[in-house]
Image (cartoon, rainbow, N blue to C red; front, side):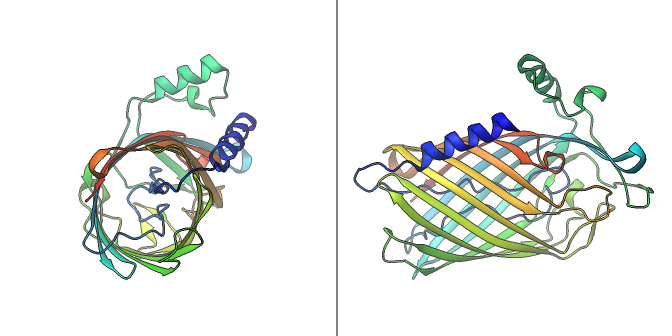
Length: 332
């Protein structure tokens, strides 16, 4: 944890250092989701900017997320509380349009996959090479998909999920600026509502629908620096998904620093936090925090490339161990 926090602090300071320069267009946070195996099919809140699209302008974005999810936790009497071992991959296409007056509407379609994967051996080598603790990975066979758990009474829980590929829920977004629309040099805030329709297929068809409401704000900290913050909650239609019990509501928040190192290059340092996900598993953590670090590159004709890494930094036993994210988008 010490080295991770040191990296976080150093990166945040770098991203937050003001610089005297003419105003640069800000590119915003990474709109990543909680892709942890037990959260993957459910609606989670992405970090986002309060900035709207201008009337008649469009944004198209194609993104992908690939990560390794591993956790083994002991409960009472040193018995196994829960084990999660597998990988996730996801891809999504998001289309958004500006309608003027600070209103932007969007539609998101996704393809999800979960299974045994191939990253275990790579991560084991990384841990051995650098001398990092492996969190019990070496005690279990590589490249398997396993989810086991016990409730607070010690009874075994049967996870009904399975590996494979399927469509995720279709998601509709409404983004409305609340204040600061005419002045990008000060505070700007927006309310974002999301509706997740129960259209998932294959292994993810049991997810049900969901809705969410989020407040997001942003402010420049200097000629090349912006800070973003958001707070909201999701409301799920189902309490039981794939044999596990979930909270109907799940508060979530994010904090993002964007430092524009050049006109075309932004460095992003981001923290995403969420409350407890699963409620009937013994010793399941009450919260989690992700650290995401990466870059956004503005190209010609409105194109933008994004890339970064994801790592759990608090209660890693309920978060993706290590992940990679990438995206390409265009505004027109």
